[in-house]
Length: 211
Image 1 (cartoon, rainbow, N blue to C red):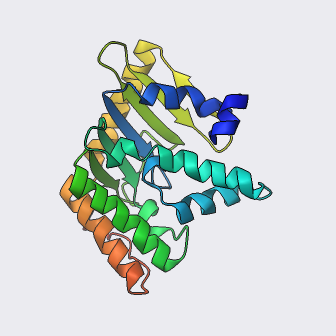
Image 2 (cartoon, helix red, strand yellow):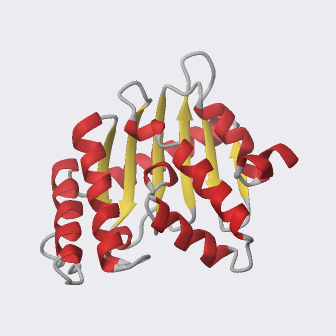
């Protein structure tokens, strides 16, 4: 736990960081925000301050560095192959200022197009009931070990390794992917939202006919 805190990671996330080093494939679901390894400093700072408003500056700096230190997952041509499903609110909710949101979303799109290590999908806000009406979920697949699932809420995270349970969650993840927009349409939506923020506009939600 002490090592995790010194490294800028929460104690419950330390084991996940270790597992990421040897994973072959990552599948992410986040109902509200962009995955940590794709977050830029202003976005990270906003999230840290929201969850820990009294955090000392040196601790905030350590958390920013730790999260950016994991950027290789999506920004390295040798990183694991990944699939990311984001709720549409990740592009609609202005976590930071308009210019910073534009930069953040453009960064996601740029990494996707440049490194091609992850496939993005956006789950429209009006899709209705779906299996993952819950917190962040991540699946880690390995070449030499059974897959793991990690789920997280604001102050707690848990790794699940029971094969039957992980398979059940993976089937639910497949249903979420099926309900989401296509990867190309999702990427276009992210780039359009970045452009809207850059032009001082709030991105519009998808209409029901578009979902």
